[in-house]
Length: 518
Image (cartoon, rainbow, N blue to C red; front, side):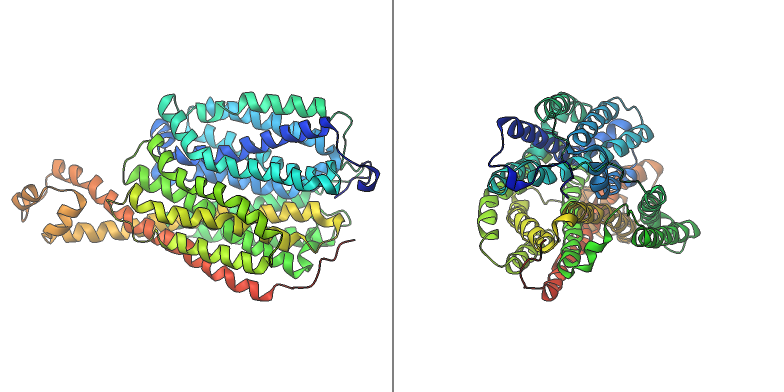
């Protein structure tokens, strides 16, 4: 979306140093927003232990952030029109910084989740604002360099995130996971305010906000998350679960109806009339499912099963990020020269293989066994991200690009939020079944099972056939629970891998004709 007060691209021969400095500072803000997700994911077990969060509620530290991001991302087009790109970024960066300080000062679960919601909403506007700035600040000949700078920032954050998160948590405390955002947030806010002074690019006075559509969108997403989260513990037929899922569906239908019939829609859903954009959003949703799912499953397994500290978890997870960074130039080179359908298919097949390679983990699986799956997944990610973006946005008119970019990014985060809820459902429902099976085997005197979960052979043989006292039960229970998590986590990896593999089928329906821009 190009604002009414923005100079046309043809009027400018190049960008000034002030625009470049301001844009780099915008990338710094985006970098911190992406980094925050990664460093918090690595240290989830440490946060859980420090605050006393139950394992089945740990996922909400990430889900709260992602859900708020999902609500914010499609509003970027509207907020840009009302505030302008410069003031939108400054406001979002300030709010993100304030929320980071609030997260660091949290003393309980509810307080932390509340600040994560605020942080996620602010972070959700930073990422699409940066990519919109590529087109709003720079002429065509400079957009390639600007895109590369933004892309490097987006790739570098998940690359160093795991090791940074682990080092911070182990060297200081989990509070510093959020405090590290404060100084860069202040620098980015003040810098953009100064260097992009007078750049109200994208502002369109008088664009109203559809408050009802906004309420319906938020209600649909929140009800969906609550319903998916309660399902494993209450059952899918539970009245509360059914009511929440029905409320989500009704709110979503109401949002679509309200948006389609509005003269000033909150979000331009007309983008979905283009087949390639719709397929691109589907692929973005599935990528978010697998990407956020894998980022959650690795620290979950390494922290609760292998009992590694956050620094060691970060060191192990660094493999994916390093591979992603090394492959990024190849993906960028290929994306400009090859059919995006072929590259997308290659990326999603490779990503599915990387996910499925993790389905055979045991209680002893550690760094050595995780290297190959991580390399495969890291090599695939950029091929799953860049070609679908061009495929989805390349045919759309310029006036729809800003809203379409928000929707496209929203689908990736929506896939991540729904994926985390379904993964959590899979883990804790399968863990309960696996735990009961292990307990039955122990009661039947299965020595192999006892040794596998960590009970000394001689001690088990001495106790076999006798009723368990309370002390023995409490000693054995953690071993059973930890062993039960292994097949449950493997089932979650399988869910991610199969879904990503099935997404490749959508590529058969992609149009091959040229872009249709105006």
